Image 1 (tube, helix red, strand yellow):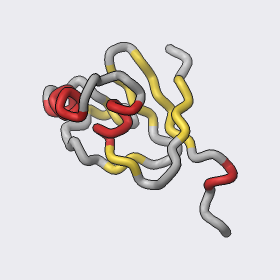
Image 2 (spheres, one colour; image 1 turned 180 degrees about the horizontal axis):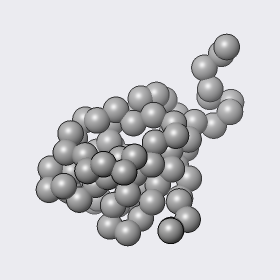
Image 3 (tube, helix red, strand yellow; image 1 turned 30 degrees about the horizontal axis):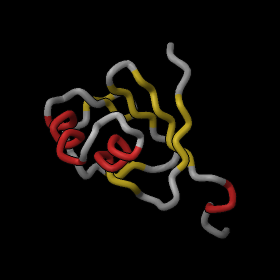
Amino acid sequence: MKIPKIVNIKKVPVELYKILKFENIASSGGEAKFMINDGRVEVNGCIETRKRKKIYPGDIIRTNGLVLEIQLPEDLSPAK
């Protein structure tokens, strides 16, 4: 199994296509949406075809042989 790359997000939730774009997996939002629509992206082990799927800390994204683990840094966690 590949070691996941940790992706820290600044707000919750984040749309799936934006993560692909900001992590340079796709060169644009349009390309990211095409990849998702084409069934080339998995979220938590299931193929995801919703471009605006809400992504939360703890989610695992797989695409193009890459594994991304989504995290929210401690200093940005919601107050309890």
